[in-house]
Image (cartoon, rainbow, N blue to C red; front, side, top):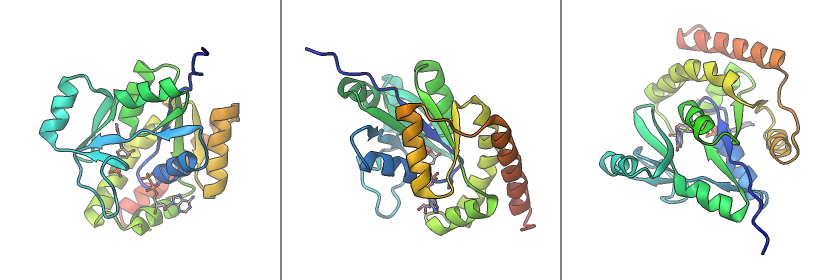
Length: 215
Ligand code: ADP
Ligand code: 5GP
């Protein structure tokens, strides 16, 4: 019997609101190459989110028990809540030869870099500060304080970009999804380093203006 083809895990990380969950869902829905890695979290479900499909929703006590039992490939506290990738997700994907797609934060991405060296780390940038804030507010799932918290965290998240294998800009959604698929399946390139650095500096400046109210 043939051994199943091993498909490397793909980590999609981005500052909140850049669009990584949307991209991940599109990649999963558009064929058989990817399976979404459903994380566990202690945050409350948003309207429309389904337990076991979007996240496994749990409480802090149970989450920490799972940590104690070594059930996570990585876990982190993000915006005051706990999030983790069940190790089982990676094992099951490896058995079926499908790329597990991890929609996780930059702390989790660092842990995966250490524990799963063959993983491909993809960082998603929004096209501009303006589009970014619009997307975050337009999603309508966080109140103003939550949006501010996410933008404050974003500055630190942008610092992590250099540790990623590839960087993409999520401007047109269809193009971005095609680009990420091509990067994973056929080794297409992401942004050049100079362009990446230029964009990150631009976003940092936009973010500073937004947070000080000088829009
Ligand atoms: P993240 O998972 O990075 O926090 P989401 O995937 O939830 O971000 O996307 C944030 C919002 O931006 C959502 O309302 C989503 O529909 C929208 N969005 C995502 N990608 C694009 C895009 N390329 N163009 C316009 N809107 C987008
Ligand atoms: P949200 O609450 O908006 O769904 O997610 C908040 C942040 O937590 C996002 O950056 C998301 O990618 C990240 N996240 C979701 N699941 C995990 C996980 O399993 N591990 C880590 N480290 N971060 C996660």
